[in-house]
Image (cartoon, rainbow over all chains, first blue to last red; front, side, top):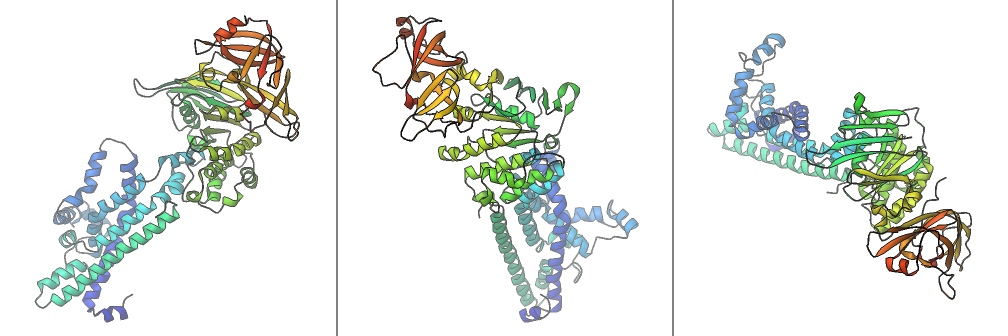
Length: 239
Length: 367
């Protein structure tokens, strides 16, 4: 993918860097949030407990709070002086602020509600009657989650992952607040576009990068659609 | 011998289930009753999908539930093979994958028919590679039967397995179901509200209404009781006679022997020696006090009036007729009974037309 193609599209090194970084940050954010998102979606869809509404609201918070506020909150929590950031730094030497990992974390938090929503929809499509049937056939709780629930909710998981990935490519406010705008470290596509528009004579670069984000987003959505159809066929529901 | 006692109340003023019954260790016990009488809830309680407030379930010597001593075995360890009305095949697995799902999880030492045997029994060999979405309703239900049987269960629980199928599909699945009931050396609990399924499959009958057991016993004995409104109130009320085909020549009426006599019928159930059960509807049996002559009716049986009981309709009565050791029911008007001065002990003639046996029986009566 890199190298020759990038040159033919006419990308400068730092532009290519922004594209690569965006892809990296978006994938890492999905990897980080997928398992907790599946767990929380399952709890929200299948369990009734006090505080469920509160958990539901908390998960959805990043959708409604300004991204800058999310970034600021992460800064407070994960900053080198923060209640989570300080021990991380002291014990493991891990610093999240102003790093690629930090950008991925900010992106993960922002796209978390998108994954949870999609996965939850996927779970709600799974007929509990099938799980009951698996029980009568001798499958214990973990066994039937892995062999019945998980495969049947996989279209939801996939849809969530792809949507979160596509949205993660474009995360701006939380990333710039928490991880700053460092070329090669945290300057993802939208941040690079923003910088280009702030630079005299950067219009052409901004346009090229904008076109790339558009193409990436479209490719992501089309891919999601194709995979969803395949999965539905595989699960015998028809497309 | 399975032993079931369950008590459960849904909500404060909701439906109350309070029932107890036994079932033979081998053979089909049918839970029969109107919709909403709690039949399916009983199966859920046995399978462990519902935890009743009070109850005791013993299968094959194993206590699966005993609320008095705090025992409640998890559903996945009860080994109750369940067949649901809606089949519930796993859509992401092939037919073979569905069939093997329970087999893989069965205890190693559990005995039961093998994969190939069950596939042959249910005639589903041509479906093995297919996905459930591509199957007809009847095929799905056959696969579901196989999947439950292959899980090597202690008991088979069938929750109206034919109720979601149209008449043609029911006719397709019923013979397979009957074969399975004969081949599985297991207790089978079969929930239904269709009397023809009772006739075709049941050895033992548990009548349920409003969450309670109204009566239980061998199916022929219960069918002959005119005091059970659930059965006698139906248009097709009547006795079930175990018969053996004595002669069946093409073009002639078949002759069926039963204890105490012989019936001629237009049915062709099979070669001589075939055993079957015939439903003789009470409204198809007429009574005469003198031997009729010059009459088209093929079956004229010497009988004795055993009992006369009120029917649901005030203008009608059930006449219990003893023909040898067998019992027939005739549903006639109260007016006729008085005109003929019918009374217990009176010798009479029971008239049954040869064309009235419309209840064929798929399963050779057990035993």
